[in-house]
Amino acid sequence: MKNAKLKISYGLGAYGKDAGCAIVYIFLMYYLTDVVGVNIAFVGILFVVARLWDAFVDPLMGILVDNTSSRWGKFKPWIVAGTILNILVVIALFNTPVGISEYWQFVYITVFYLLWCMTYTMMDVPFWSMLPSLSSDKQEREEIVPFPRIFASLAWLSLGSFGLYAVSQFGGGNEELGFSRLALVVSAFFMASSLVTIFFVKEKHLQTERQKVTFKDFLRFVTKNDQLLIIIVIVLIINIILQISGGMIIYYFKYVVGDTGYFGYYSAVSSGFEIVGIFIFPFVVRYWGRKFAFNLSCLSIFIGFCLFYGVDLFATSSLALICVSVAIFKIGIGITLGLSLVMLADAVDYGEIILNQRNESIVFSFQPMVVKLAAAISAGCISFGLYLTGFQAETGVSKITHAQNSATINFITFTVIILPIILSVLIYIIYKKFYKLENEAFIESAKLKHGFEG
Image (tube, one colour):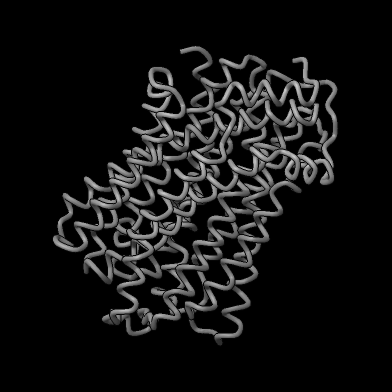
């Protein structure tokens, strides 16, 4: 395998980085509400505000990194600093004090969660921004991309499948202690993988002259590139499906199915078949085209969640049928993850046609930005929905699992299963009606209109 050392080292960097993210995205809300006993409304407000703020910090961080110059390059200093700071914050979050007043507990969580958002952005943006500098050859770049993607999925697979089991083993039945020790283990992996990236991933393609991007350029590119806006909406909806269903699933297994042990199996199948979707994506596109691939992904998501709904109605405790439905919709999700990168690349080309300016950095900064916007929307829907329907969490002292009322059960089921069905239909409609970059006549018309000769 050509450049195997670089590809695997870059992939390992993504593994540790996403493990540090996964423990927060998968478990922090559960840890705060059901282990520490924090009010669900407070958690919801904090998550929404922090993630919205963090989403809009991404392009600013990209501009800052792009204008950095040092003897170690412009990416690695930020990766090192961001990793070290983020590790300290993760450990602090999963050691939230219990025996203090509610006010100071809120202050503690707010400060460290906001710091987590900022420090993760500090290392995440330069990590992905480093990709174009690894090679000037387009084909070689395309060969590098699957490695961090797959390793990142493996990180989510590891935490989702074995996270609660690890908490149980590390804590000996004490979830508070278990999460604290899990955070230490994840942080060690995070640090080690970042060091692998720093020492073994070498920048080969360096631009001697580059145009500095300002925030004004960013706004201009966004408002003028109509097809980029369509892609942003599509990718946003896909991420809402992923995050609102995935964020609520632990509550579904605990309060609807009645067995949190299902969560590990769900996560293993979920991440495993997402990787399958990523693997088959290039073959589907090669033989049947992008339009077919997108239609197939939407159909797969729709059928998978419809089957899941049938299981919920008639065989709620059937782990096998739940896993089959998850496998079906996750293949579709995997295909869309590959397609989203291709569509963003198309938006770069289209932007060059209509604006006579090629801005890869601006376009690809939308990927983490949209993920965080989806996280904010999902966190808000989950936390406020649970609060308004009368959700009763375990308390930090008694650890008594309360039976939830019918409104809460219905809300959990709606967000986990029914809402994704609706959203899968919506993204199909948006794609079919508004996405034009696969239409050669549309591209040629744009070239003539804007006098593009490339």
